[in-house]
Length: 134
Image (cartoon, rainbow, N blue to C red; front, side):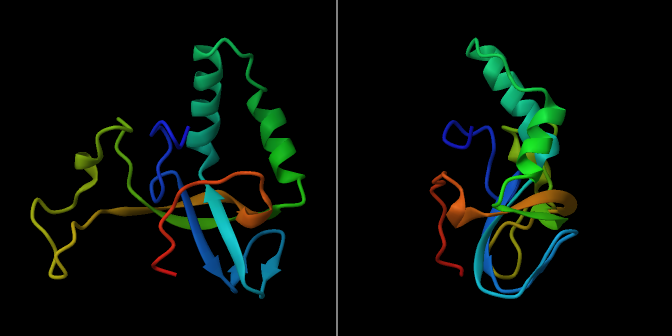
């Protein structure tokens, strides 16, 4: 769903390196690459994608239970994302100002969401993301 543009970095998930993360399950104090996922968006999009491809999706409660019980799960914690509009393809609705900020970058509103946090490097996934900011 990332490769086809349904879920987007900074809007629906976030990947970063940190040595400080407090979740409801763990207190991380060693350097880890973390992925935080907003499952309130990811699970319904997963279900829709399965139905569109003729596959029966797992029930959301089963999927949530499975994800919370894998070794790579660090726990639940708040994570700040750029504010998404209702239309996932229309990011223009999230821009705070029609112009640019003092640093020349477009400014977006942000929102904190209660998210699933995983150790990204131990998951069997590869999401092309620019890690140059880390």
